[in-house]
Amino acid sequence: MKFGGTSVGSPARMKEVARLVTQGGEPVFVVLSAMSGTTNELVEMSNRLYKKNTEGAHEIIDNLEQKYLVHINELYSTEEYRHAMRLFLNERMNYLRSFTDDLFTSFEEKNIVAQGEILSTTMITNFLCEQGIKAALIPALDFMRTDKNAAPDQFYIKEKLATIMTRQHDKQVYITQGFICLNAYGEVDNLQRGGSDYTASLVGAALPADEIQIWTDIDGMHNNDPRVVENTAPVRQLHFEEASELAFFGAKILHPTCVQPASVAGIPIRLKNTMQPNAPGTIINNHLEHGKVKAVAAKDNIIAIRVESSRRLGSASFLRKVFEVFESYQTPVDMVATSEVGVSMTIENTNRLNDILDELGSYGSVSVERNMCIVCVVGDLNRNTLGNIALITTAIQRIPVRMISYGGSDYAISFLISQDDKAEALRSLSKVLFQNKES
Image (cartoon, rainbow, N blue to C red):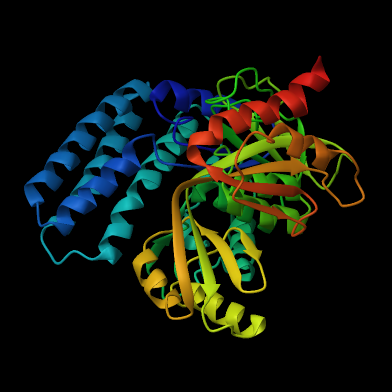
């Protein structure tokens, strides 16, 4: 069971999490994010230390300490546990203050950012113990590690976790930190923002668990963006591949990396709502509903790059050279369309955009379109499934489309459009694909 920052965002929410993890009676493994807002504060503290603004960093630490002292008084009912948590909080805050004295690098930043999860997991573990629940805190740094390619070392994770669980076999609730890990060199690192979902999936696959539950503040994954489209509905079931496409193309409820470990292990993922725990949510598994379109998602802030060969290089040589540029700058490409003398691509990461454009210019003329959006429709879109592609293209017939990606997956078709047309596209797709059918 993984709970995000909103789910543990206050003492009241922490008590609700404690109730949820103990109500079934069977052993559960719980992955927690930092309390909402804490990670942002720790990142801001790091930013100030990079700028040698130690006074500003101390201000953030002092504010965090006061906020957590209030939380401690509200969460615990006995002075014994309040005192123990005050001591722990004091130790963590002094640890943060120690970073204001020396040279500050990305290594120190990762140690700082990890403290949010360390605080939240210690708070809930102690609360469970105060309630008489047999709970164990298992530090993520004892088993969660990445390899030299910064990918999770799944063999190491499974081996270490098995040893730990053998020693702690008599507990009802096991708790660990999401997001944080060690790298291949034994340094504190993390699985990037949103990585608590990844932790939960990796732990679920390693145990192995019967089910991986991701608890958020939304009732499952919706069939469109509720911020843009009215009357969206939760999707009750998704195939692993459908969920992966939706997560990658903008559905915020699930981190894109979460699906792969669970899919390989064959363990279902259930998306649940902490605020409405009895709602059915969304189940993600290996079942495919044939012929059905499930959902629409959109990814903003896309850059489209078009390169036309000026030297009429052979197509194989030209394409190889173009994609080697993106590889050399570690910039993933989302969509691709090719012609005899040109190629168009989309990227989201613009950190090295100027370098990429400069290098691509040596292979041909380069044009760039900014403020683009990828709209992705997900479902059973196998080439043998008739009708769905016609419905989808009809829905966006009035939208100027720059690029289409279809055939790379049996589960998705994607369109590149201007961000200005996003709302109209999502509403039109929703009306044609879902609302008309419901009526």
